[in-house]
Image 1 (cartoon, rainbow, N blue to C red):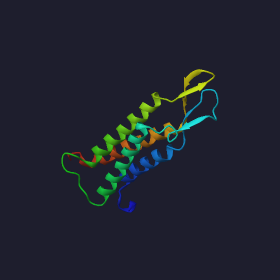
Image 2: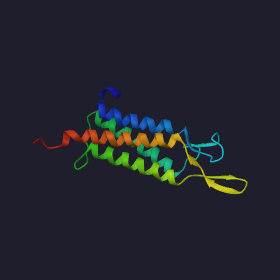
Image 3: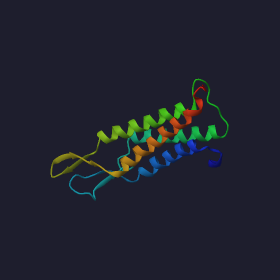
Image 4: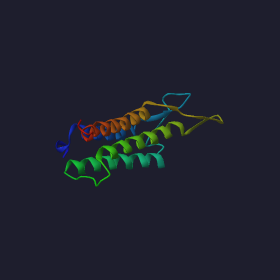
Length: 142
C-alpha cells in the first residue's frame, strides 16, 4: 500500500507516525520533579482528539490519492496537506499554552513542557513540508 505513494506522500505519513508516536511520550513534566510527567494520552481531551482525527484524515487522504483518486477542484492534495499540517501545529501550540495544573502542597503551577510535545510539533511540520513539496509541480511553467 505504501509502495504506491511518492516520496512527498510518504513524508506526510511519516509526520502522522511521529505524531502518533509522541502521544504516549511525556508532553509535560512537573516543575519540581522531572520524573513526574503527563503524556499526551494521559491528559487526553478535545485537543488531542482533534489532533488524532486530523492525523487520521491525512493518512486517508494520502492513501486515496495514492490509489488514483483526484480531489475535486478547487481542492488539491498539497493544499489539503498544508492546511492539515498547519491545523495540527495550531492544536499542539494550543496545548503548549494550555498545560495541566500541577498541585503540590496547595500551590498550583503549570507543568513544564517535555520532549513529547515538541515531537508532535515536528510531526505537524513534516506534514506541512510534504504539502509544500507537493505544490512544486503545480507551478506554471515559464
